[in-house]
Image 1 (tube, rainbow, N blue to C red):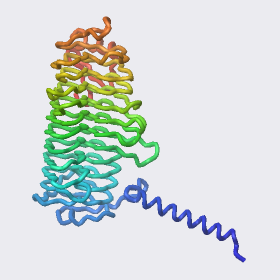
Image 2: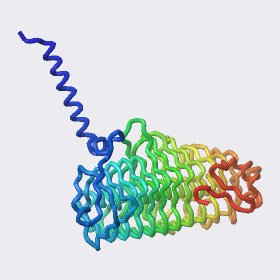
Image 3: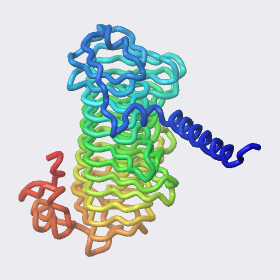
Image 4: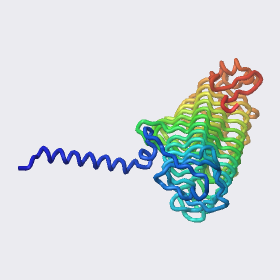
Length: 439
């Protein structure tokens, strides 16, 4: 007689085994490769021959700089990669499968510099990145003096196309041209752990020449819930774009949860929109989805030029063109706005959220269309102040029309008016406020 209890027990055991196997298959790229409770075995490499022989199941650590000598590089997948402070240079990357990049997929990549690479795309390829296609953790990775040109449309990132956490990374002296949607650091964020927060921290884009379609200076688009962008900077860049531009983030998604942009510094960039119809251009976030929960805190936008095509009716804002969340303790200083026949504002052009304790100082308007020294009418503003070089202040309440220059240059006055946190802001008598991390 068949023992039903044994049969049921065997079925339960088989189900459990199949479940574990299925889960491992789905997560093997990251959980098997980079288990935090498992010690990583590093294979040391120091030559081009060893670099080309890397295998997907192993983790590697550089022990010397490697010069590819102009060799064409085919993207490789490895478990983990540690550059250990070394540089890989003088490579050439064309189309290789679905992703144009250096490493296609890793659990983690760190302590690496990619220098003097050329990326040239002549065939169809939808995604690309100068360092890694997909990663869970990216830290201390740098791109220097590289060029990317594409004759086909591609979505491209300076460091990684997809990642959960990216810290202490930089892109400098990069030349980008062609039919490209470009993100300076990360194209889209992803989440691998339930209830996790995707973080992009201490990353910079500096001294780059970028001709593209759309641009997200640090991140292109929020595609997973709870994104935090903190202590990032974009500076000294020449940008010409046919689409929308957000110098920190291009676009958020309301269905994915909250997002915070804080303590970011946007300085001395020249942005020109070639769009002949309508574009959204912003110093921090260009477009937020309706009902999104976005907070922009303690950001400084200084010394930039924003200009549109003569035929366009675009929106230009020093902080955000479409804000549905909250802007707090942000300063917009010495920028030049030229929306031509469109709408421009030092803080925000459209909003159903609130703007708190923000200020605009000596910004110049060259637009023929509507210009708002702070924000468009019907936006909730609390303790926001302005002094501008050549703009009408008719849209402001009488008591908030103007701060004298000496208020901005006096730490006690500026602190009391705008409640700036001295842990974040450097306030020195006779000087304009500065973010401490970029002072």
